[in-house]
Length: 354
Image (tube, rainbow, N blue to C red; front, side):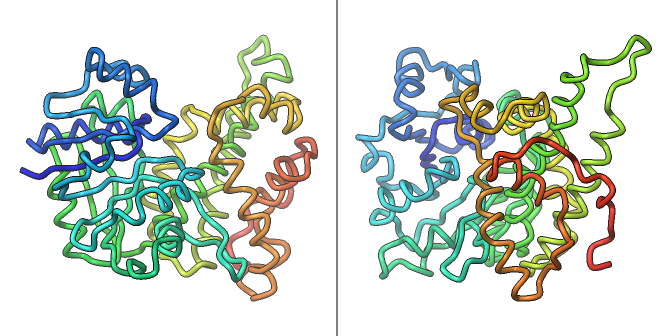
């Protein structure tokens, strides 16, 4: 039995409590300053207000002020914050990290490195740690299609743990594997982490079709919707994910697997990125759409902004061509430049590198 501390009591961080507790581990669920109401509710009656489930036995909630107590003697630390919280995590927990205690990240996103290229979040976090700890914290990251509510409901779920140490990956996978939580391992950290970040941005793009359908008044009298368009956007998203993963040095097999197409499929089923895409497709401008979603973390918009700044660098280095990534460039025009939706369909479906 191990003791696992999860920092971040939102959907996914909390959902990991289920396979951990079912395997007999003691779980300490620590809320960030933004999770205070969640932890208050969990302390009151054990019920997680967002997941709408009672936490399993063996899970103990903590407010952030008790972080030291929650970390004492922990065998594993789980980073359960959203991508905008990575800097907070590094600044708050960085001095408390221990090279003997591995870190498992469920945070999805990309940062911009000093050279202007996209940087996977585990490496970005490492760069923000106190100098004596940089490069010394063993870590792994989770990728793949996993809706938190389904995991907490013990529905069949398949994911990938990615990292640079195969032995650590297998050890962490063994801690969490259950008869419903299936874990594969991969050393393709760039491919996996790039895929799980890109799927947020591209799910917004696919959801534009839903908004365009709403703007057209919904399905017509004969029931014709816009599934054809959504499928074309999905296919283009997959092709562009492959282009970007290859440009950044990742393995194309990750794009075709759970971290890429698998995670993209499940993300399009609903959530924050899809809501933003629907609003944009229905005719709202980016500022209007963001106002409708005030208070919601929008990792999709953030990854599009990061890539918008990185694309010129990738072009200068010859990693991509000016005509590559038409869907991503249009998402940049919508999200960063505030332009209306006008899908460049005639530019779609070019094979990467053709």
